[in-house]
Image 1 (cartoon, rainbow, N blue to C red):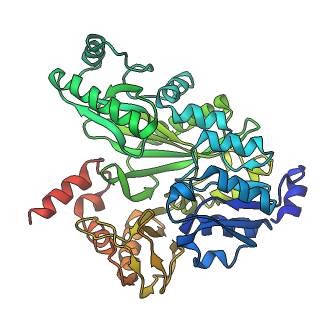
Image 2: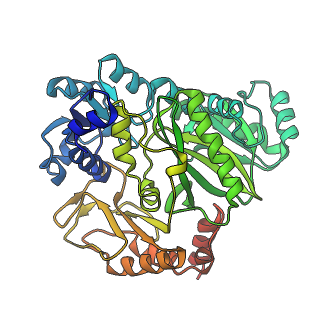
Image 3: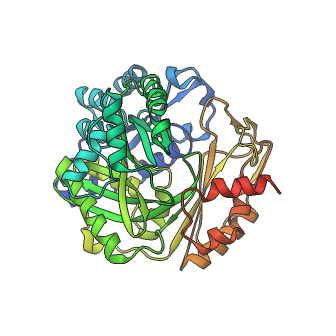
Length: 464
């Protein structure tokens, strides 16, 4: 469906015919491809460090917006907005990371009369404040981690009373935090005051606000996500569950869909509540509700108001192109399906391939001298790199995502092992050896490890 036919199907005129992609790397290429399939022109912005990226050649226009430092390029709001004005772009897609969850940027895009391909600025603002998000989720009936939906007071005695009421261990979190930063686990009352003091200062420095909140710390939960899609007309659907429990320092390493060993009735109930929450907050586009799951219960922790790195596993099991749907919703279309139309089949895994030492995890920038990609049935590689590409030290070390799909989980496991054995990259260190080890780990193969499993596994491996 190109833009012209999209007009006919939706009954609405297209509001833009060109998209500025305010990102880099594999996600910039992924968005560019979806735009081209819909007949939309693309404007690629880039830093000086990315001036030789191959995906710039297939764009309709490319504009250098600054030097390598992200602060002077990919998160430089003024430079991006000026590029949009100069090129005549009608919309801006932020991808993930950088400015994708910046409410101020979304508002500035809208104020310029352009379309922000994401939710309204107010929805980003609400869900970006963890306290406001929890309050909104409670109002929508979404189950949350035990703890108040208000910020911690300054009074230390009152903080101690709140923690005692919740029951130790508790976790102190920054209200404006994310990405695993701005949080501390507290196991007893004696440690509480110091934890609050340190976390408050860290929050002030990292997120611009010292506001904190406290919740029950769950001991052995899994990290389970629910993908949602909403058109802004009151139509919202959930598109399956993902398990993202394999993490190192709160950073995801391997993801899979669907999340196994969760009763259908429980999954369906919480998914319906997430869709209801989208309607209540006026959400538009794709989003992800993140939960801790323990002892048959879901506990909301945050919502990502953007496309996720791990969105391909949901695409592979649902058959829904989430980036395409983002674009169509931004064009003013209603969803092409309702909840009853969505079925998920088979099983999918995603491995994040990073340019880093597989044992020390230190970044490994440099020149990729050779690269062989896996292929065959059910194998997908999302990457912007090839032989001759220079991995920059200025950005995240993610250079590829290896995704597989099988008829069931055992077949998907075997398919990933085969794909990993075929994948080779020379010139820089990568975490491919780590992924090969993970997919031989008996506990992971059995399924359902908790969020601490990978750290425990790393610790045991280092002692061998």
